[in-house]
Every structure is written in C-alpha cells, then in structure tokens.
Image 1 (cartoon, rainbow, N blue to C red):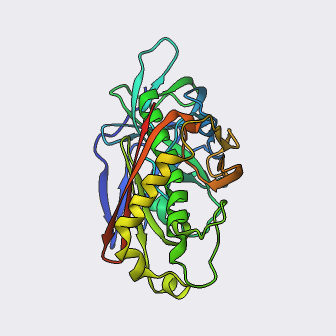
Image 2: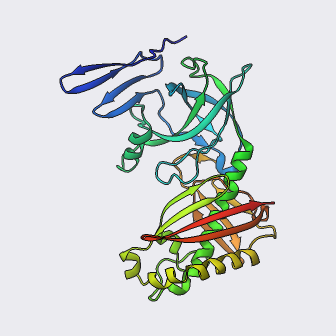
Image 3: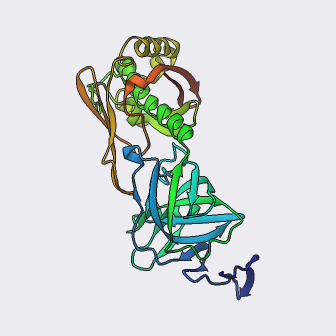
Length: 332
C-alpha cells in the first residue's frame, strides 16, 4: 500500500510557494510557478476506440493519482470519450473501472490531459488548456475520474476492464449527430442571405455559415445549444446580418420544415473514422445526404445510421451579437 499524504504542506521559499506531497511509487507532484505538474512514467497518448462505437475495453493502468476525494486514472487504451480541451462541446462518458475479481468503481467524468512524451509530465485542467494553445509538442491522454475509497496508488501496471454507460453514450451520440444535421440545414436555409461571392461551402454546396460563425457549442443528453456570432468580418464577407436576424422566425420554420421532409427515415449509414487511434488524432464524421458524401471533422461520438432519428426540431433566438440555435433530437 502506498502512503498518501492527506493534506499537502505549503512551504514558503522566498516569494514562491512550493507544494509538497508524499511521492508515489510511479510519480511525484511539483509546482512550477503557478502550474501544478504531475511526474509520470507515461510517454504516449491514449489509444481510443469510441469513434468506432466501442463501449468496453481491456486495458493496462499507466498512472493513478488522488483527485477530489477520488482518483484520476490513466490507461493505455480506452473506449471512453473525454471532454475536449479545444472544443468542449460533448461532455465526457460515464461508466465503470473493474479489476479482476473486484467490484466496479464508478467513473463519474472523463477529461483530456496532455503529457510531455520526453519527460512524462502530465498537465490537467487549466494548465492543459493553456498548453494545448501553445503549440507545444504534447500528446493527449484520457483522464478517467474515478469515485472510490479504495487506494489506487498501487494499481499501475494492472489490467482492468473499462465499461461505458450505454444509455448516456447513446443519448449523447444521438444529440451530436442531430447537431451536424441541423448545421447543414442552417447553411441551406441561410444561403440566400449571402450578398457577395459565398465563402467556404459545405459538402452540399451551401455557404458554410455554421463553420464561419459558430463560437460555442454545448451538448447534453436532451439537446444541444450552439452560439453564433455575426461580426464585422462576416458582414464584410457578404452576410446580411440585419436581413437574417429580421427573418429569424421564417428561417426557423424553413429549417423545421426541411428536417421533417427529408434526410430522416430511410436507412442512411453514418460513421466516424478512423474507428481507433490516438486521442489527438484527426477524426471525420461522414454520411450521405441527397446522394452526396458529406464529411465533417469531429471528435465526438455518433449514432451509426440516421434512420435511428425520429425527429429533429430547432429553435433560433437572437442574442446581442448573433443568434443561438437549440437542437433537440428524438430517437426511435
């Protein structure tokens, strides 16, 4: 059993505060300036299989450290989808972590961390977000937030089974697929408000307002909310902001009418590729609409066929510098 100091001791050294904690067999914790770093033996990013729809994997634990009354656990291979650092639209999966012959431990959240492959330094939370924007050569790892009173300080190197909560994954995947279908519908119904040569077009040939204007996206198990900014740069490119916002109720009606009348019902396979790879690898969601192959970069999870969608409804609401799109997707 590894001894864990319950309360770190803060020791002042000049103007710098040093955080000291009992060192684990596999890592130490140190504070550099205002950045909390975790020393690990991890040198590679996590291999993830959620893109292919995986809900269960056998893996080897590579790191574990206390966190908020529970544990932060890394493994070499995971089916869990973590919340992204760069575009945190889809929340992390929930589920369980089980060691052979033991009881399952609840995984209550799943986040993204970054590890320095040369030194094994792990960054989490705000430090990881800052590092992800710096261009540093780091690799992404899945951080499983485990709620357990069991001491996991000695589990590194052990095999474990990871199971994703299926209902939550299915609900998030349904809503995320609805987001893409709604975005393509928005582009189609807003196309007439471009007064100059249209900017980048989507896979169906319409001006890609979604890509040009979206600033924030949030997905839960019942809906998604996307925030769009129509600023000066977009207006200079030829988007008629005033006309679009004045016609927002008509655009909403047109979008809902289109979503009721096309694309849903018949079997239409959809996929994310590659189905397996490093967490920081590029993934593409693709399907076929109007006989055209559509591809959208996306790191989330999705349903495998649009026929699983019974209905998609949208609401448009003006905000100070643009509008919000709320999408609700109902499954069959």
